[in-house]
Each structure stands twice: as structure tokens, then as C-alpha cells.
Length: 554
Image (tube, rainbow, N blue to C red; front, side, top):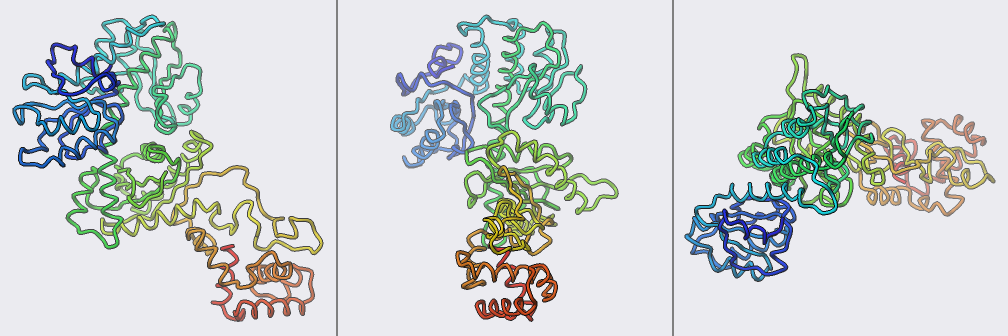
């Protein structure tokens, strides 16, 4: 449906205030009603914006109308439909702003409700299926009309799916998420486990509902036995479900904006005041009492990929609410969520529920990653935050754990797959490249594996260090090791390897000599050289820890 089609609907009695060919031929993807002064973050591209103009007053300056229309233009709105009831007409300053930004503006008379406009758009969008060229119309007209009414009424997906296939005898049918979560099913369809549902996604009887969605936000229509249903009919049913999904996305966009506001409040230099924090939690549908868990994800650097991935993962959790948004200081492709307290059993503790949350997410992560195999999806999870005032610390934990996950090091192993240096690797003079550089013991990682790391996983020194930014680790290693950090010098490489083995054998001269096939006096000489070059005394525990950390940071 295009903007100009609205003007042809006599029942709406709309008036064009400004707009010409390019503006009037824009396609309408949906409808959003708003009276926010800056609605940009709640809008999706191609939407028709309905506004009663409550946000504007005659005493306001021109800049206020300018900001409103600029927000519409930035979001790619198809047109503005302004109600006449509040001000007895549409302010001229608003029309001028629309002209400057190239947004068509239509006035809505008092006797036309916004609901009538919304219904007309969605019924027309659904009706357009019957007028498509090069393909016969498959769904009966009465079914199409019923589904259009259900869409306009905002019915649930189970009812929509059941009514869509009722004329086929209500065969078993499912709407499945990208990770095999059942979104809807008909009464004749039995429950599907996540594993079986994920397998069904690749079946020949499964259709993608909205191909334009991100890999993590896809819905799929699955009929185990479509029988005699024409493929065209199934595609039309999938398109009905796609329209329902887009309506839900508009509500989700508003929820994500509220979550982002909450995260911005938490991510401040000092803890936020209790009252604003409590209101922000309630705006996200979260209780104002903990415990809470914070999770931060890094994935595709696009508008919605990481947000969709995190939202899809958290929908597998049962009995707890969550809010997904973006941090103002986050990187592109980063999303963060607050997970509320799960409804506990009689024997549950906060630690139990947090452990269940982490276990569920870890079990799901491989499936989630497979939706977009070329982009690694990493996550960091905090320990439970008992109160809202603890959320800032939990956010810091989650971001630290995310850095550890992205480092490529497996917590507890002390090495990065494929890295140059492996602690404890035996050096054989005259050996080939692997032996000469300490790569013989390195495990090659054939792909950029996705990882989910919880703070509780960081239980060793090497695991803890993975959460420090790479440039900081590198700088520490260089300064702590001094000249030995220059691994292009064969003599220094030999000393580093001796140091590594010496520390790995708890400072035992004899076992170090045995591991390196050296005389004990040679080990003593090399360690003395290390102490001179680094300024450390390896008889002291703290100096041993300094150099061990420096080796792990290489």
C-alpha cells in the first residue's frame, strides 16, 4: 500500500496538506501512533505516523515542530497523518517542516478515528495479495477477510495460525523461532522439543515467515504434513504471520528504548538515585527488588543483529522477565540485558537460579551461533546483583566477562588457540619453526568459535587476565618483561622459555633442568639473567606472580 492510496479511501476523508509524486508513492510498511516530541527511536522504516499533536502548543517555537519532523525523516517514515481535533486544524509550522524534510503530511478530520486509519492500512495490505500479478490467489476471500480482522485486532499468534489453516482441516502447524522455540501451534500440533524444532527448520515443509528479518529474529512456518495445500496458499499464510510479527516488532522497539534508558541510568560514573532507578525498572516490566543478572553480547555490527540474538536467547528462559537494550557507551554490535528474578521453587536460592540461567544459555549458544555462522557471537554474564544499587557492579562484571570471551582464550587453559606462545612448551634447539617459536603445544582453532563466559568461570589468574583489554595486556607484558619482550632475539626467546618452565615447575631447579634437558647450573645461570634483565627477584612470590602474569599477557 502506498501513501496516495489513503487519499482514495473516501471513508477516511483525509486531506493532503503537502506532498507530491515521490512522497505519495512511498510504500507503507505499518502504522504507529505517537504523541512523543521525539518519536524517532520508536519508529521503523516505511511506517505511517499518526499524531494527535498533543506534544505541540501554539506558544511553541518553530524548532519544536522541526525536531519532530526531523525525527520522522531520520527514521524513514512514509508520511505523517496529523489529527485536527487537538488544535482545530494542523499548525502551518508543521506543514512547513514537512515540506523542508520531504515528508508528506495529511490531516485527519475529527470524525475519523486513528483506529479506522490503522484498520484500513492493514486490511488493504492483506487485500493486496489478491491483486498480485503472475500468481493466482489461493486463500478463500472469507479466510482473507477474517485474518485481516484478526490482524487489526492484534490477536495472539496461536489463534491467527489456527484460523489460517482451519479451512484445510486444521492440520498440525507450528510457528518456530530461529533457535527452535515454539511461538505458536495449532490445537492438533503436539509439543516439540527445542532440538526437534531446530531440526524442523531445515525441512522442505518449512517456510521462512519474514526473509528480511535478522538471522536470529526469523520466524518459520512449519507444517509436518501440508497435504494438498497449494504452496502459494502456504506462502500467503506466512505473509499474514509476517505482518503479525512486524506489529510485535513495533512494541519490541518501544521496549528496547525503555531498556536502553535503564542501561544509560546504570552506566554512569556514580550509582543512580534509588527513585529514578526504581521507575526505570518498572518501565521495563522488572521488579524493583533483585536478584538480577546482567548479560552483554557482541555479535553482528548492524542495527538489530545482536539485539535480536540476545532477545531470542533470553526467551528460552522460563519464569523470569528481562529487558534488552543498548548501552550508550557500547560498541557497534553490542547488546545488553537485565534478567529479573526467576520464580523460585521451595529449595531454590539466588545462586541456583543464576546457575540455571547460565546453564540454559550455554546449552543454547551453539544453536544460536549457527544462525549466522560467519559472525562469532560472544557473551559475558555477571554474578547475581542482589539489589538495584548493585546493578552498576553487575554491568561492569558482564562487560569484563565479555572481554574475556572475545579474547579467544579458554578460561583456565592459559593460551589463545593458535597463538605463538604456549606455557610449558619444550624448546629444542635446532628444531623447526613450531619448536623454535613455542608453537608445538598450541591447539589450532579452525573457526572463530562463539563463547559465553560467566564471571564465575574466571577462577584462575590466566582466566582473570583474559578480561583485561588486549592493548592493556600487551603493554603490561612489555613493561614487566623488559628486554625479554623482544621475541625476535633468539637469546631472549630461550630465556623466556626457561622462565616459563621454571614457573610451571614451581621454581624447582631440578625439575626445570630435567624438563629442558639442561644441567642445573645452566638453569641457575639463565634465571639469574632473567632477574637482571627484568629487575625481579624470583625468590619472591610477588615477583614470580608478576612475571607469570606477564607471560600470560603475551
